[in-house]
Amino acid sequence: ARLDAAVEQARSWPTEQTDAAVTVRPDAEIVVTLTLPVTEPHHAACSCLLAPRCLHRAAVLSAAPIRTPNPPQSLTATATPSPTAPIS
Image (cartoon, rainbow, N blue to C red; front, top):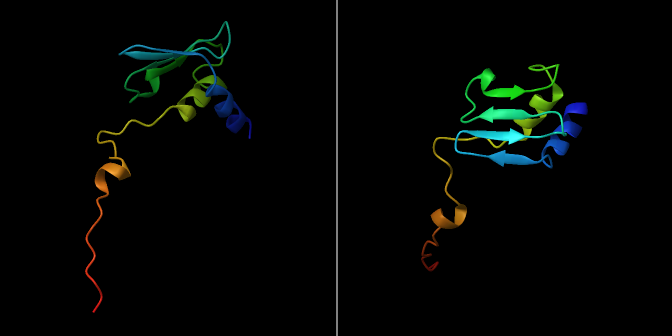
């Protein structure tokens, strides 16, 4: 329950993004940095004293979108109406 609440809060924390990283600021003193793409545990770092086992890092990683190599196409792009044959 505590992580769920932190994930909801993390969605509203200020972020900055570059091509190489995303920086999230839970408060004025703490910074969570995600080195992109996040593929290893050390690619997600928090500046708090409890890192890497802190709630900030867990919340940011839980709230972050999952990057896939082949993003799904939208349904409107792939859905084309098929002609229907009259029923005899």
